[in-house]
Length: 288
Image 1 (cartoon, rainbow, N blue to C red):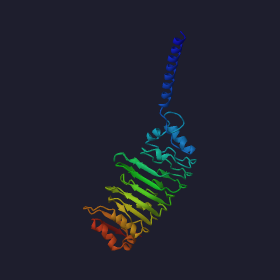
Image 2 (tube, helix red, strand yellow; image 1 turned 90 degrees about the horizontal axis):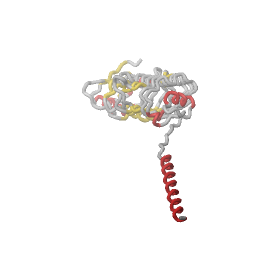
Image 3 (spheres, rainbow, N blue to C red; image 1 turned 30 degrees about the vertical axis):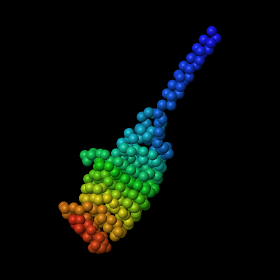
Image 4 (tube, one colour; image 1 turned 45 degrees about the horizontal axis):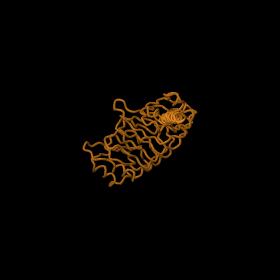
């Protein structure tokens, strides 16, 4: 009898252990939620208020990936100092006037947007940082992908940026989509280590008007640009012009590169010949 009871006790203990093991495994299988770091309480408050779908007071990586439009979201919020965390909004396509009037905004991380929108409804980053006069420098601004983008007056009216290491515009600029991108009154940017152009037709009309103080830039890519107007680049070096002309693909329709007289007079003939040999014409005029 004692032996029989002992066997029953062993059997029941085994069942309990198995049941406990199942409960432990069930707990371990619960997926963890990865949260993004948003140090600025005011920027975080906006994102949580608008996009915290599970209402846990945080923004997860999954929630961030669902965000496509923050237009006007933080406009005139003078408390925002940093927008660290915006780099996790990997599907962002609309941010017009998003931080317009955020006069205390200083820190902006590298901006890299993958553009998917069609020509009829381009991604829109126009006026995104209008009147953000306290902003510090940005290392990288990149618009990549096969969609169309509008970044008209993204910064301004005078962009406070002093340096920019990399500027990539390999998405399609919409019509006049980069017009005065760095401000209607320009910017103080003197050097851009690399300017990566789209390897296809692209409309860069008005882009370089907003970079009147640009002295050196290395252009990359193989592009056939429409409306590339360089007559505001009085300070751009001859080597920079050479890298631009080297980055152009040959064309047969005789489109032009617009230069002011000061550009025309100080670019050596052998440098200009690079573009002429590829079929481009120089539309020169009195810059005064």
